[in-house]
Length: 93
Picture (cartoon, rainbow, N blue to C red):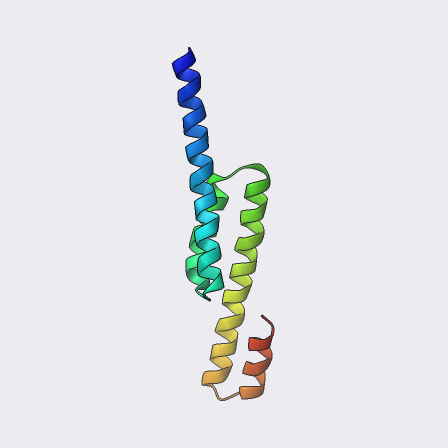
């Protein structure tokens, strides 16, 4: 029974560490401006996490998706030579 308890404890700690790693990797991607990468890591954390950490992953995922959409709009406006619109979009984040 003791071995089973230790095994369960080790598995739970491994899962928690892996999910924290997803969030940390997502944060690194987000900080470097790679929102697609951040979205991927935050989605993994959201799928595998529970409780407070799941809520944190959801908030970060929503923020990364929002930034990714804003950058798409800004780049599109810039490519269409709508520089004032592009500037407004870039300044939103």
